[in-house]
Image 1 (cartoon, one colour):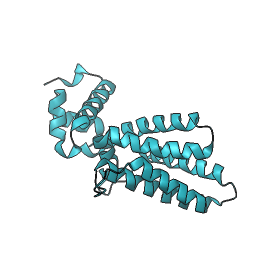
Image 2 (image 1 turned 45 degrees about the horizontal axis):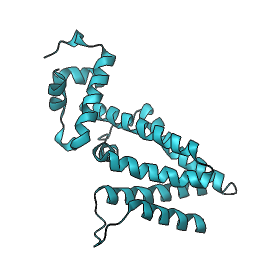
Image 3 (image 1 turned 60 degrees about the vertical axis):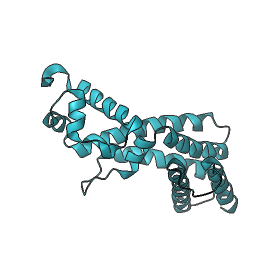
Length: 196
């Protein structure tokens, strides 16, 4: 086992999160535990608890890292779009594609539970950043709409895109022919926006 002073706190955080990220490349977080992570990096579980506070917070840091990567990709596709409507479609496709490429990491984002503990501010800010991106695009598309209308529309669209993405990643459309999740997203957005 490595001694506590073999790595600085920052190095240990990086090593731990990189190890979790690599594990989630091919396996679900359900197969992970504090003991398993500690063993993989050559430390004892209590060291990780001292660094992260709990196994739950360790996983939340892994979620934050994934959200940061998704946010960076989302910001890039929105910035490269020619207008707000195109950006909205590209943002939805980006969400879908990210989940397809990283299914186990994406799964952890939505299945992680704080078990009654409050969500730390640093995580709440990440979530707000992602949802506000969608809200800004909708506000640009319909400046006459109230903030409440924009908020509701953003949640409807996010819920729809998320549901399609979830079914697409898990291949649960239960159809005799393959169904393209991105085609469903396009259908959802075009119909919703034309009526909104």
